[in-house]
Structure formats: C-alpha cells, structure tokens
Amino acid sequence: MRHTADVVIVGGGAAGLSLAHWITRTGTSEGGLGVVVVEAPEGPLRPAERTWCFWDDGPGEYEPAVTAEWDRLRITGPDGGAIEAVPAPLRYRMLRSAPFERLVHGRLAAHPRARLLRAVVQDVRGGGVDGAEVRCVDAAGRPLTLHGRYVFDSRPPRRLPPARTTLLQHFRGWFVHTARPRFDPGTAQLMDFRVPQPDHGLAFGYVLPLAPDRALVEYTEFSRRPLPVPAYEAALRQYTGRVLGLGAYTVEGVEQGVIPMTDARFPRRRGPAHFLIGAAGGATRPATGYTFAAIQRQSRNIAAALAAGGASEAALVPRPHGRRALAMDAVLLRALDAGRIDGPRFFTGLFDRAPAERVLRFLDGGSTPGEEFGIGLRCPVGPMLRTAVELPFLPRRIPAPHPEENR
Ligand SMILES: Cc1cc2nc3c(=O)[nH]c(=O)nc-3n(C[C@H](O)[C@H](O)[C@H](O)COP(=O)(O)OP(=O)(O)OC[C@H]3O[C@@H](n4cnc5c(N)ncnc54)[C@H](O)[C@@H]3O)c2cc1C
Image (cartoon, rainbow, N blue to C red):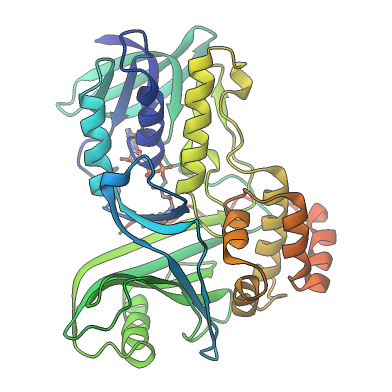
C-alpha cells in the first residue's frame, strides 16, 4: 500500500510528538498540513516510560501532562554546603512520557489532518525535491510505503558520529515511598555531590519530590561506561540511607537511562526531503544531557517555517544549539574527561556565583554573549583555556557502540 502526506514524522517519542503537536497546533482547518506520525508498535524499539524535566516560565504546551513542578532548586557540594536558588520566573517541571503521549495522541486524534500509525520504519529514501519515501512494516506484518513532502526522522542512531569527547550520562532512579514525610515538595535537588566520586568523571544524587513522602531519587554518573545494575542499586542504597536518611521506604518504580554527552557533529539532513530531529539530530545539550527544551525550540521553528511555506529546505531544521554553546560544551566535556577540572566544584560554583535564572538560561542556550562571558569568568580559567587551545588538534573518533538507552 502507498500513502501520501505533506509531513511524515518517523518516531513518536519526545521529538516526533512535539513536532506533530507544533505543526497541527496552528491550524485545525482543512487547509493545514497533513501529518502522519509513524511510531513503532509495542516491542523492543519502544523506549520504556521515562521522565523529562526542563525549565520554563509558565503554563506550557503540555500543561495537563505535567506531573510536578518546583520553584526552588538545590545544589549540594561534597562537604554538604547547599546552594538554594529560586530561578523565578522559571520553574523546573517534570513530564512523564506516558501522560505526554496520551495528551498528544488525543490532540492528533481530534485533528482532521493528523494520523498516528503503528509501524516499524525500515528505510527512508531521500528521494528528490518532491519528497521522500518511508518504507515500513505495520503491526500486522504488512509492508507499507508512505510518501512525504517532508520526512522528519527521530529514530535513535545505531552509532554516534565521530567525536573528540564522548561521555555518557548514565543513571538509575527509584520512585520511593517513605514511611514518614522526608521531602520538601517545593525544592528539586538538581545535584547532590555527597556521593563517592568515581575515578573518572563525576557522580551525584538527584531528588525530585512528588509529595512529602514520595520522590524520584536517582544516582547519576557522567563517565565513559554505564554500570551494572547492582552497582547503581548499591549507590542508591548508600545515598537514600546514609546521605538522605530516608529511613524505611518502598521502591514503587524504577527508571534507568543513558544519555550520550558528546561534541560530535550530528547531521540534520540525509536527503533533499529527509531531516533528522530530536536526539538523533543533535538536540541533546552536550554538557548537561538536557534535550527536551531544545526539542521544543526546534519543533516550534520547523512548524513556523513550514507554515510560512518560504523557508529554504536547507534551513528548515535549525541547529538545536548555537555554535558558541557547542564550543563551550566541547571544552567543558574535554576538561572533565581529561580530569583537568573538578566536576563537583565546577557545577557547584556555577550556581554559587551567578543568578540561577541566568545559569539555567545559559544551560538552555538562551543567554547573551555578555552573560556567557560573565559565567565563563567564574569557571576555572586556566584549565579551560588550556583545553580550548588543545581541542582543534584532537582527532574525532567513532566512539564504542551506543549502549542500550533503556533496560
Ligand atoms: C531515561 C531518560 C530520561 C531522560 N530525562 C531527560 C530529562 O529529564 N530532561 C531532558 O531534557 N532530557 C532527558 N532525556 C534525554 C532526551 O530528552 C530523551 O532521550 C528524549 O526521549 C529524546 O527524544 P527523541 O524523540 O529524540 O527520542 P525518543 O523519545 O527515544 O523517540 C524515538 C522514538 O522513535 C521510535 N522508533 C525507534 N525506532 C523506530 C522505527 N524503526 N520505526 C518507528 N519508530 C521507531 C521509538 O519507539 C521512540 O518513540 C532523558 C533520556 C532518558 C533515556
């Protein structure tokens, strides 16, 4: 069977559904663009439910699906010294992927020109200026070909592109329910460095309270290799017990993941009408792993360009992050990987010496050059400069195979 649509979106995760949302949001009229989202049926290609956090300044597009939000952030150094920040007007917000999917699926179902198709995409042929072809197999095993004027592809790459530095942000978290109230639901603990630091990279605890007796508590490392599950579990037991002193609790859910932090250059186009979006197109901020906010920015821009009908196709998918931000992240990643800077001290210092709102906008790529210069001065200037001088001479290498994101 062969179908035609203006826009075919491959993958219905954060990027695919966000783009479908932004394209269909502006026009429910018959005149809007027709959109088909092709999402893998239940099975090995579908990621496990996950939690996306980001900051923004108001009721956003996915308000009904927001699980929790926090006005205050805390960063705790290895010595227990805590920095509390109120990044107003920004708030730190949590979306879980299942309610997000239900929300966007519902909106697409109500739109006259949008459709969600359950199928495995096997191949996208770049085609010519008149569009690209998406070859799939549907849930019943039948082959199906879609033709899209534009195809936006968010399938995770099998291999990461060559990079000078590739670290992994890898973590495991427990949704805990404590016997007594132990959490302050108004404060998200972004980084807590009171955990043993690995020989290479850095480690921290992360606590997102959902109620006085409920929270997502994670152990996270930025390093070269993920850990075996028992090592994460031991670190979580140590953190919840000795550091947080949670007392008796039950674990009601688990979340685990790996987010590559790399200075690789991600292609944004595979053919005249075949574009890469989301993490596959480089939306992950290399120095932090945050991706969701960049996905929203990118989706909004693509939808606006499509609606205007005038964007040159080469410019249809804008860079998810500016060149300056990527250059600074490359230096930071390298300095961390080389052990030239003390990770806990670096991240604690960032929040200690600059207003939280400015730091968060910097981490999202929304700060001005002047603000970035100010933040840069608060970094360990010597090691960062040495690293910056060295970077252009380092080769880009293909990293070891991308580890399974979710287990
Ligand atoms: C556990 C975890 C927690 C994270 N938390 C945060 C966070 O708090 N904040 C943040 O900013 N970022 C976070 N990230 C990083 C990033 O936001 C997520 O990885 C995000 O899901 C990336 O969105 P995406 O659309 O690019 O990829 P995905 O959301 O993984 O979407 C890809 C989609 O493609 C589909 N697919 C794959 N192959 C095929 C195929 N052949 N045919 C059809 N469909 C296919 C999959 O089913 C999936 O739905 C997290 C990542 C992980 C792994």
